[in-house]
Structures are given as C-alpha cells and as structure tokens.
Length: 246
Image (cartoon, rainbow, N blue to C red; front, side, top):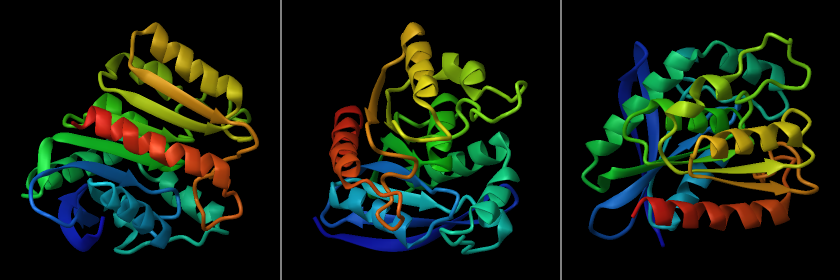
C-alpha cells in the first residue's frame, strides 16, 4: 500500500515538537501507530519504520522526542555517548507530555480513528512505549522492542529505580515485547521478570525472545541487525496492532 508523508508541529514541554506522519492512500479513518525513536533521534531509519506501518494500513506518527535539543536533532549511530546524554535529560514527565501531545495530534487528524491509537518503540523508545501503556490516556496497545530502563541494567547501582515496579499495576492495555537473548543491557533474567510480573498481575502481555539476536536487532542500518529476528518480529507487531486496534 502506498502512503504519503507530512510534517506537523505541536507544542510540548515548552517547545515546538515535530511529528512526522505517514498516511496510507485511500479514504476513510484508520487506526494509528505512534513510532518512538531510539536514542539517535527521528532519523531516516525511524522514518522508514513509520512508513512501513503506513504501508500496513496504519496512520504512523513519529514524534521528535529530542525537540528540546533543537529541531531536527539526530545523533550518528556511532555516538552512543551523545545519544545517551540527550536521552538522560528527559524525565518521565517530559516523555508523557510528548506522547500525550502526539495522541492529541492524532485525534485531531481527520484520517485517524482516534479511539484506536497504538504505540511502538525501539530501545529508549521501547521504554517510552511501556511507560505510555501505563501512563498516557488514549493509548490502546503497546509494542516494546528491547526497551531499556524498564528494569535496571546489570551494571546499574543497587538502588537504581525500577520502572516496572512503579508502573506495572497501571497497565490496562495489551502489550507485546520483543527481545534479543544476547542483549548485554537487558539480560534474559530481566525479560523473564517483566513477563512474570505483568502476567502475575493479570496483564495482557505477550513476549518473544530471539536466540542469537542482540540489542538493536531490528535496525537494518546498524551492525546489530538480525534479519531473521526482525523479519519474524515485524509481522507479529502488525498482527498485534490489527487485532487490538480494530
């Protein structure tokens, strides 16, 4: 399915935030998927991912969560330190404000069925997707790709915050997670704990872990790309959204 792209702008957190939208061709209202960036910003890869969701029949919107650093802030893939530094300035309240502004933007889009808005995120964006499922009204389903920060990294201080513990009770929408078994920052023990915690609380949660895949396995613009894992995960994500954003 072909799609058209546009750039909108909203006020969020005291500054202007660009939202890159991709709309399937044809008439009628569509469900929407918010696509959340890695720590590298809304780069060409993230725009391509959003376009892929539009090709599957969703209005896709990629908000620039780095807008407080300046319009169009993009970090090279080889500068993890810079990306982590920018991400580190964002509070959970900042993130909730940005996603809430994106939900409002989509609800005002005449092409969008405003009662059916999902969210998907990668790395930092995976945590944003999880947090949004717990904290942002208007989100109907959430997909998490190797969301860092839901539980502390193995090398984190013993008193590091545990987002899972603080928010698990608040999740009331379906969630699906995709993880790499060889992800050094998100060990399988953490993946299993996320699953067991959410299921023990009666949450609608589905999890997939890929042997041989590491962090960032979905990004086909990086050396971390794992084709087999990515090609299994994407159609599962599409099916998940088609089921839960009916």
